[in-house]
Structure formats: structure tokens, C-alpha cells
Length: 224
Image (cartoon, rainbow, N blue to C red; front, side):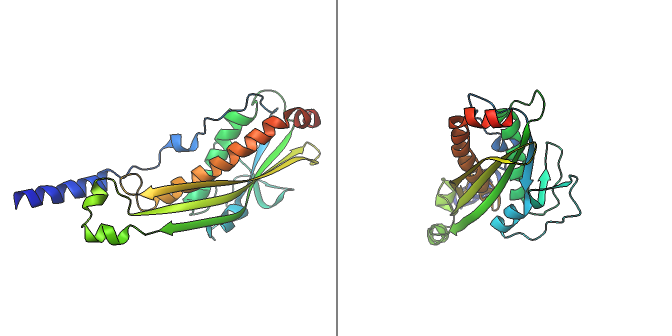
């Protein structure tokens, strides 16, 4: 009886305290371009992310930033921007985008030379519960040892547009980012979906940063 009680406590402790929450470092990409673009204003297409995640809580009147010529609901963003939506994955994406721009893509010193916009096109999100029957059969014992309860696969069409100060399109990049995360002792009931979404976005942005680096000379010349 004592062994059974100990095992039960061990399972509960692992499942409740082992589920790590999202941390700020999850939205701080480390891949930096060797040649940084000149300073650009950072823009974020909120409705495209709402469509991607099936959210409908966005309020056009709630943003602290003015709208742009790049479409309704596209706002200039920075570290202090508040986006009025209940979908945490949109807040996460904005935070990651601003950090990536300021630290890995552009030189924040000097005069502004243009604008850069992030949008999301098509999106695929699916939870896989193929381990659920085994979790129930083993009363969570294998989950306590690290077996996932389910997984989430997220694929995002990441779109980045660069404009000069006259709003002429300088460059446009389109790449797909993918990620798969598990719900077990890794991330909690919603956190693993947030993690998959941020990693899919980061994966797409890494591919786009490589393209920006490849076309750096042309882009830089058009912005200057």
C-alpha cells in the first residue's frame, strides 16, 4: 500500500511540477545575420495572425499604434506595444518578431530607411492524441517517465515585406516554418501549442533571414 501511495504521489508531482511554462528566452531567437539591414520601422499584421490561429478577439480600436498603408490591422510595433487579443500566440509572435528585428536583422542605430512587415499566410495546426490510449492504460505511469500525452504540429506560411520610405516594395520573402511539440513533462496543456507556434514562426524567419543575407547588397542599396 505504501509503495502504491508513493508511486501515486510521484506521478502527480511529475505531471504538475514537471510541466515547464513558456519563458522569455523562448521568444529571443539567436540566429543573427552577418550583415545587418539599416534601421527599419517594424510592422505586424494582426488580422493575418488572427486568421492563422482561428482567433476573433482582435479590436481595431484597442491598439496603441496607428494603422499603416500596408492594410487594415497592420501596426507599427516595438517592445512596449499592446495588442488587444486574447490569443497568446499572437502576443508571442509580436514579441519574437520585435526581438528578432532589433537583435538579429537590422542595425538599430542610424536613421530610418524604410519599413518591414510581418504577415502570416496559410497555417496548419493539428493535435495528435495517439498516445492517449496508452496513457490511460498505464494510469499515467509512462507519462511520468516522459512519454507524451499528445503532440501539436504547426506549419506557418511566413511572409516578410520590405519597403523604402516612399512605400515602394523593395523585397518580399515567403517561407514555411514548421515545428512539433509534445505535451508531457515538457509543456502544459496549452503551453505546448504556444511553443510549437513560436518555433514554427522562428523556423520560417530563419529561412527568410538567410534569403535577406543572400540579397543584402541589393536590398541595402535600394533602402539607402
